[in-house]
Image (tube, rainbow, N blue to C red):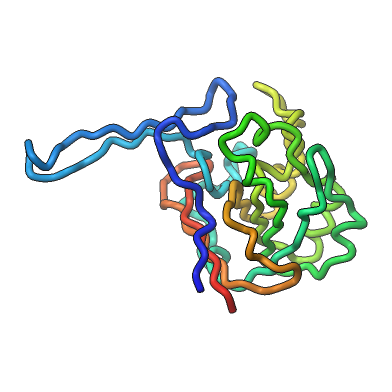
Length: 217
């Protein structure tokens, strides 16, 4: 069975709330009755909904979306059950030392159930930096999760270099970050799934919405 882990892209969907992020707007341009076809104008930010980050998101000379390794975007991934981590909790070094690290990892918190609520961007569970460092050193190249970020959301600033240390560490080490997954309830701890995470090939972009699927193996 193939499971869709992608949030709907729709007008007015939540964004991270920072003043620089574009709100999503989908409006009709051509109408079938008038011009013989329906067409739409889609305006959205590069990190709207389910999306993938490119190194350029946090690294000035980092590579952009069109240069990411597509071999990492499709393959076997291991699910890690983190549903015991509640609001404001952290994934610690001891937590990740207890799991087998693989090239692609899907961290399941169940946080997507808070989508479209005031809680989604507040107090979501995140990773301690030494836990991320451990995962990288042991070969993780794709980190997918059903939260907004691997970093502490309360630390996000309008401008600053130290508010997202996990993003910086992951992206500097060539790890693909896939955020805002949904529909992860079926996933079992330690089980492998075939993961497909395909963003648009937008040249020069720091990130892009992606269609993310998981298939039972």
